[in-house]
Amino acid sequence: MYSIDQIYIDGAFVPPHGSERFPLHSPATEAVIGTVRLGDEEDARRAIAAAKRAFPAFSRTSIDERIALLQRMHDAVAAREDELFAAIVEEYGAPSSRGRWMAAHAANVFRDAIDTLREFDFERRMGSATVVMQPVGVAALITPWNSNAGFICGKLAAAIAAGCTAVIKPSEMSARQTQIVTKALHEAGAAPGVFNIVTGRGDVVGETFVTSPDVAKISFTGSTAVGKGIVRASAETLKRVTLELGGKSPSVILDDADFATTVPLVIAAGFMNSGQACIAGTRILVPRSRMGEFEALAKAAVEATVSGDPADPRTEIGPMVSAKQWERVQGYIRKGIEEGARLLVGGEGRPDGYDRGWLVRPTVFTDVRNDMTIARDEIFGPVLSIIGYDDEEDAIAIANDTAYGLQAYVHSTNAARAARVAARIDAGRVMVNTLTHDPKAPFGGFKQSGLGREYGRFGLEAYLEPKAVLGL
Image (cartoon, rainbow, N blue to C red; front, side, top):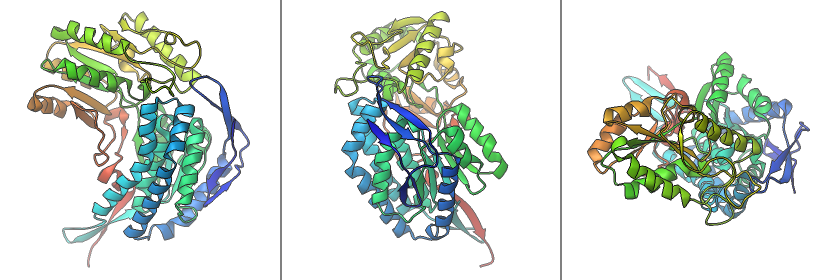
């Protein structure tokens, strides 16, 4: 049993002022594996005060000094990759292959920030003015449970590269990952107050961060509903806000696609991170002329997909993170059936052979209309919808008929045609015949998928304010 009783403020591990204990579960067994003591408003205010004190000196550090700190952070997190991997599998339930990528990603984001920082021009000549990019101030970083360690490190890396200090509210459901990452970051030797980490509830610690006049910047990854609340709450002090929110990403399969290579990519896009991914390609748009062919291949591929014990290397889909999330996914499967979609494969309940653990049967519906609930709402589980279309114009219209616009996928054997379709899809990223992640490319969404961008040059600029100096 884990008992996590410390938060990190002003360069030191300290007991929280808050006294609430939050249970930590193993999604694979449903057993309680530990508890974490949560911080409260007082802890959040102490963290903000520490970051505010540290900002004047840290904002004036040189690029070389920041690169050196980022490198130390990379090395310290990388050294704990195996420990972090074990926590991700046990605490979150990520399959081993995904968990290993997530553990490595938490360290790699610091190296990516270094690459961006080395190429970034903090001073530019524009007309008769010298434009200086100045760090915005104290940044509050709020992370989700579906990639907690990666988001802590990625957001912090961007803030540090810009010269900002940070207060971080990680998901309380991912306290073991937070503990491991915090210990590693402490070993990197940042000045006290440069970063502060307070595990607590969003409506307590998160709200204190968002409403504080001493916080200049918010970076939040999570649900669209919570993101809207952050915008409203931060408006009083006109905070700079970056939001990476929900998605209902389309996989557009053009009629010239090679299904032998396309189907595995489409299923992988839909089921990535056990379906608990904002970028999951959960709406699969298929030409009606090839629907039967696609359904047969997709059914076979999904039936071969293993949903089970995340520690088993054969597992491709792990459990949902919590009982609440499992019930949510089951409810959407029932809703799909009630609204008249045809169940191609999967359905309610756990996979065969399991009577415990928050495991979901990999599920695909077909004969789905784009106005059905399962095609509109972000389910956040391994539930996919096949939607037929008549021609290219129809496919583009269906792809864009959503409140979201985070990511999209296009599959075609004709590169020029794929590029033409990709250009017309309203999404922050469009993948053409690939699932590749590029850390230098901006990441974020159109419409209700968010505000602003993370990663690369755009992600760094989100923590900076341009100041024009004239007359020199």
